[in-house]
Amino acid sequence: MTEYGFPRASDEVIAVRAELADHVVQALRNAGLPAFRDGDSGDPDRSGAVVSIDPDAEMASAAVSVGWRCDVGLVGAAVDALASGSSSDAPVVRRPGVIGLHMQGALIKILLSEGIIAAPENDEMNPEHVLVFGRVSDLPPALRPTFVPPGG
Image (cartoon, rainbow, N blue to C red; front, side, top):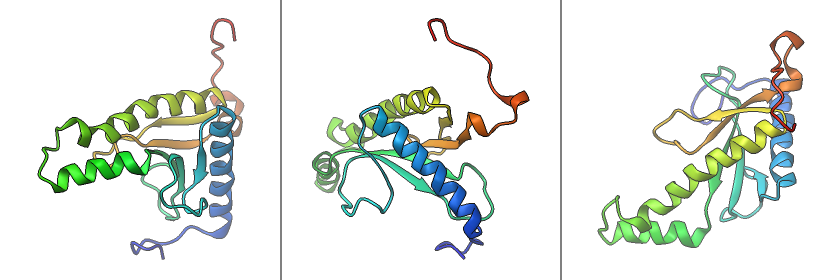
């Protein structure tokens, strides 16, 4: 069982998800971005692309996701502003989320350029997250995209 009471995926399934997560981390690092697996950094305040694996056996969405974590000072300023009574629409409060949304597009484009199937999260709680479904090379040939961009 997972921490939320759902059946846990088998070790074999988790291993496949971990391999995909490692490909995602490497693709983002190749682009020059700080990227790491959730829980592997040793520093809970580390900023950059955080790659997570869903351990649930039943999947309602993607098994791997990516979120952007801003610098702890920026997030702390937003929390402090909220605690002191600032509106949730105040620029200092909105800034981490706005940055995350801008990074979402960049993360998706980087992953797609590396042959990793990625899409925006459709979730109000994590609107800036990126869902990762697999690699294009894992698709059967009949389902692989054939479009080659100009100059590609």
